[in-house]
Amino acid sequence: MFTLLKAASIYSPDFLGKKDILFCFDKIAAVKNSIDAAMFDQIEVVDCGDKIILPGFIDLHVHITGGGGEGGFSTRIAPAEAADILKTGITTVVGVLGTDGVTRSVAGLYAQAKKLEAGGLTTYMYTGSYQVPVITLTGSIQSDIVFVDKIIGVGEICLEDHRAFQPTFDELARIAAQARNGALLSDKAGLVHFHMGLGEAGLDYLFRMLTETRIPAAHFLPTHVNRTGMLFQQACSYLQKGGYIDLTAGFIPTREDPECIASYDALKKLVDTGAEIGRVTLSSDAYGSVPVFDPQGKLVSSDTVLTGILFEEIKVAIKEKGIPIETAISFITKNPASVLKIQKYKGSLEPGKDADCVICDRDLNIEAVYAKGIKYS
Image 1: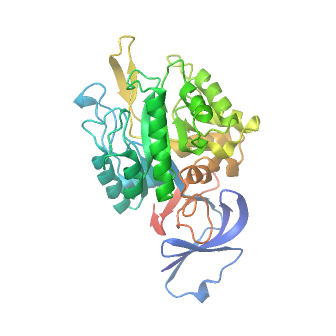
Image 2 (image 1 turned 90 degrees about the vertical axis):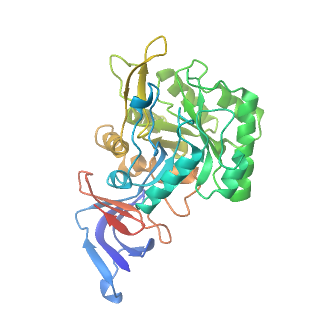
Image 3 (image 1 turned 180 degrees about the horizontal axis):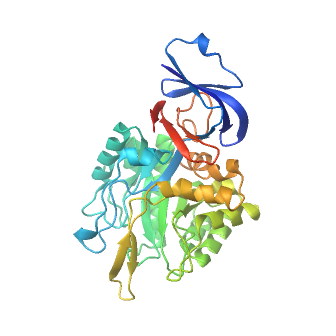
């Protein structure tokens, strides 16, 4: 019934010092300097005196049904498993479809989200895929958001990519309007989540959304914005104008791809320049494909990443780039909880919120993960 984590160094993500955390079933019951275990029956006490405890991580872009397929059926990637995600410290995921909205579907995405939920994760999802017009579950984006418990937005809508469906600005504005109205009726985030490719126009449509519509900036979330230096510079300007941006882990500059910016370098620049980092998130794009195409658009190679890359790059930001722990982990805890409008339950270690936490040693190696009060090693 009760679990008591004793005397850990707590980052909520703000540093709280040495505290005890009491779980009651699946909720955080108390965070105090000292909690007497003798006051409770049926209690498990865990000595965390030399440990660091962080909130459970939130990954808002995971291809939970598997991605790939751009080179035919043999290049499809297998679906995610809950145990593989939980062991990386991630306790909440948002499922997304990508290129393939044909052999994979919104219904299949929902079923996989329910499967992962049964395995211990908290799961949400976007309706639709790269495709415009958007294929939905109930017949409209608005209805999907209102009536389907897990659907918190639409996406990832593909822009500036050879796989995009070449949507017009007016089409995107109508998509955003449906998401906005669905959000109002259901008290959800109503995000329009954009996949950003290599095209030169970059975020032009999103800048226009801020000036030519009255839809609040909080409904737009472009991802992969560290794909190129030019796109990242645009993203910094977009952030200054009140927009929200999502960086992607796994972009490492190489001789073949020198233009991308590693997430930890992008985060370092944003922190050092005094950007509004509360509107910045980091996601893994895990289980999706990382394809390489030749100049004729033929697939040359395809790879994937797993969710573990999310915290690995946060650790680089902390250990090598000098970003404080409380700042670095906010990009995968507090910030995505706010963007997804789930901060009532997720993102920090406070009484009343879900009992999600990650126990690390002093070198930030994960030793245990609790998801809704249940321990996963």
